[in-house]
Length: 526
Image 1 (cartoon, one colour):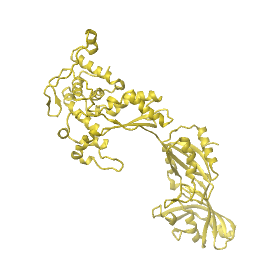
Image 2 (tube, one colour):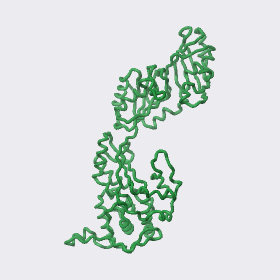
Image 3 (cartoon, rainbow, N blue to C red):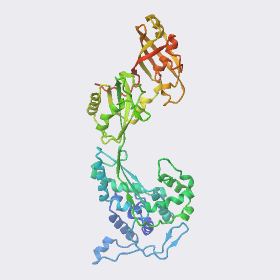
Image 4 (tube, rainbow, N blue to C red):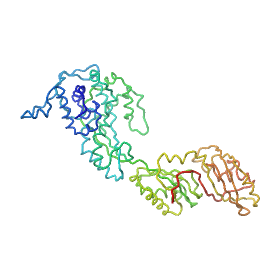
């Protein structure tokens, strides 16, 4: 049984007369019972006719069939001269004649709730999902509808608005069930059964269906004149008539102005909506860990200058390759806690990194499987090593960047001095604490970073004598410090610098990152 009330009778008659389909009638009667929309169109039509017959004190169709030897003639609504009220809605004197349930295309949903809520369309959608070959245990159904449906719904609402007021019904346009919701209620049970997975609102796997209707695209155009401020061109939209823009305009326009520009009820369409291609998309998976880089000829990311690749391979590619194939992802985004130059090694516990895997076709891996992925990465190259590999949330990734410049890093550098030195010449270095330096954007990165002067801290240093022209320098610094520039001065762009402190020309021959002091991601026991 449909959840209809006696007051719904006149509304049902007007909507059927206007050319609305059975499910749209339920929508405007604010039927919020999912199971009502899951009935076939034929069954809903029979229920509506039975309801109207009962409201008129007539036997229902089923009861009549039991008492007559022949089927009764089909009752059709005979429209007398239709009059248009002040609100623009049509009125008829045939108040209690039984309306003909329309077989034409619905004026409100343009056929979406008539022809695409059956098992046939469901099977088409599910076949696309199966061919896409995703692994999932639930899904969410996303529906894209033509923007003009909002205009047509508004017109239908104005058509029944007078009846609503006359019956003192506590009903507003916002109470009308949306086409999108009605469609989902009608189809999601069949989709879930076909795919063997429940349809949930919070699933990470999205199946998108959509519809278009070129015949009525112009339905929205009058709004651009009457509510021009609601329609502004956007970069990523092919048309200014987005659903949100149309809804905003309909909220602003007065009933009288709407009725001057658009028929009420809407004109009957000659064709139904055309379904768009079904698409699948899984939410990104985020995976994090720490990496060591042992090569001085490996960039962190692909090194491309003027469109030409300078070196083969990169840290991110070596890590990404096994992950992309295992998760069967379409792509990835790589980020890390800072970055090292191509000729700098990263030692110690490694540098934290995170990778967003885009549209993975497989998203769930247990700890043992993630462990094997880590082993695959480490076996693929001796230039890097990954540890603490784990799947994380998007929110957790933010911890890697939190207070990034307040973090500290430790370095080891091999230093050359032009002036001959002794062991005692290095003693003063250990006494330098919390040295503030000003670093103008280095010349070598000026092409990709804005010109600015950044203040950084050298928390502590120590030196180990090697020979008369070489020593090893250990530094503990604020994250974001340019170590190479602190050593050689970058033509005076970093002040003070090691050259000035030692009163000699010095340069850096080798640099290693010894530690990145970020307590994320959590360590994974070996």
